[in-house]
Image (cartoon, rainbow over all chains, first blue to last red; front, side):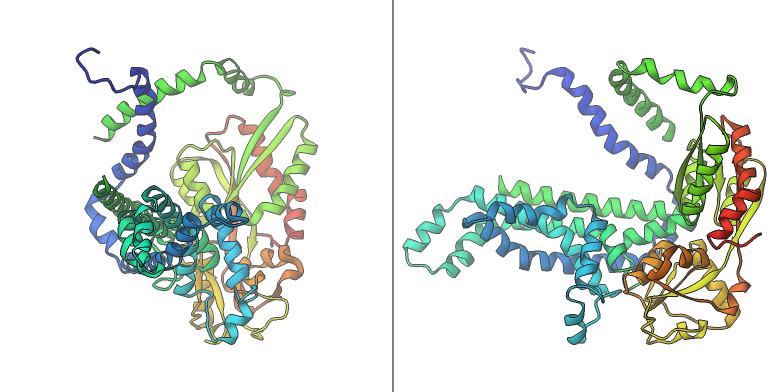
Length: 263
Length: 265
């Protein structure tokens, strides 16, 4: 002990910690061990697989963009202002984080569906949301928006308002302060939040299958394709699962990369 | 590689499980020994049954329990292919009732079935529309109308295979707006009014009551889904499992199934 640097972690803690890590890594390893490597490439490049992957990347990117457009203002309001009912509002905004996605799907159905709250309005506008790619983007945005809001609000609070106050006393208008001071300061946090939202959108399943349906090239994203392939071709399902794991690992790596820039 | 990961993992996980489980290990062993002892011992059998059998099998199970003292029937309802995958992975099931022969064949091929499966019901497709039938669907041909929002099962699941069968029989090509994972998903899309029509089973229309309108079509007789049932060789209560399968194929079981809209095999 005397020679080692004091870490403050009792040795016994390593046992449950290792078991916990194993608990997460083992199922992934078990899945990887079931991959039919001989046919792996042909399985993941089949037409339906490519359609699903491309659709997933396209819709997740759109959803991330929407999350930034809607989430940045939300995070600003939650972090920089205080008003009656703010705590309640914050809890409500975070709800999709803890709701089962299928509940989100049902809620969206009763909002944007043909018989839903906004159904007639949407009909009048000549739009068709049900069973369209738009529905997928809506479902993904619904579940991933809180990720961006939470992480950006945290970054905003940590960054504090010192520079903003200085800028404003020097005569900068609020919009200028936001554009020139606040946003550049929190950019790494914003990037991390956007990447997290993207990852959540990529993995979205329950809300999509409930709200958007499942049709190749239109609404059948990669998780839906995996779920369907499992019915008839388990090897393809395992291969596609591994693709999704690799994409997720890359995304997490990206977040860690942006995080380490902060420190 | 696989074995190495396996043994390493087993060691660590077992160590943890052993540490956690020391307090409650006393009670865990006792009940499983009861299987071999005399008749009045309480027995629970687990029946894995296709999702479409939920209401009729729940009723059959209650009747079976009433006629066999000390027997409890527990059900797990899911898609047939999910169930057979679970049985293949060693899930503790005593009876398997599949919505199609293909999934029962998987279980038979892996020697998981005791004896020969018995066909106990058949089911055919029917068109379901919202009660007001907004798209005016009254034949199978109407489903091919590009203005109708039609939902089908994906070809990978039994109801989708059946839908493809009737399309081929009728010589039409339906362009669905969505290919759902299960027949329940199709029905939900119709009940919620999202879709103008969907192809589901006769029994689904019956169970949905007045939330949907059923439209029968002559081509449905071209594709008949047969439901087989079998006791599973891994069962610890094979006699009870066999008795349940016989009960389903017997008079009382058949009466309940036919009331739900199933036809005789």
